[in-house]
Structure formats: structure tokens, C-alpha cells
Image (cartoon, rainbow, N blue to C red):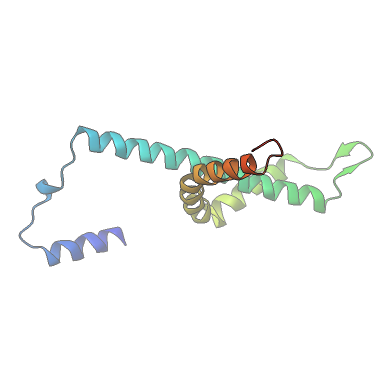
Length: 121
């Protein structure tokens, strides 16, 4: 899809060269910061999704029975494989959205909790 979009863009603008698309040092720096942010959030979201799958598997197998947790290494690998195979796109998009809106959510939530304090005048 990206290649198709570039071909259509080039067809719509035949006189424009690729040299005009260059980035300066600051643009590259901020692009790298954005990519680092998105990749780190994607890894975090991927791990959360696998953890949810592992927890669900553990609960469906009975949880802790006679002091032992019934969960094998196969279940762990299966959780990461299913997350990788079926939910990777969801995790990457969710990572972008959660990463962008989590600071806003924490700030607004903190202000709301501060305003509801009993000692707040």
C-alpha cells in the first residue's frame, strides 16, 4: 500500500523530485525519537496482550490447585505466538494511541483526584 501511494503521488506530481523530500538533522532526530517511542510502546503493548492471554489460560486451567500453578512453558510460548500471529497490528496501533493519550489521561486524572480531595479548599 505504501508503494502504491508513492506511485500515485509521483504520478500526480511528475515535476517534483525526490531531492525536495530531504530532512535536516532536527527532523531526523525527532523522527528517531518518535520511532523509539512507538517501538517501545509496541513492545509494552505486545507484552500486555500476551500477559492477558497467559492469565486467561491459567484461569481456564483451574488457577492454583493444591499449591501449584498449572501453566507450562508451552502455554507461555503459545501466548506469545498467538499474540504475534493474530494481534500484532492491533498491538502496534494500540501502542500509538495509548502512548499518545496516556500522558493526557494521567494529567487530567491527577487534576480530578486533586480537586476531589477533602482538604482541597
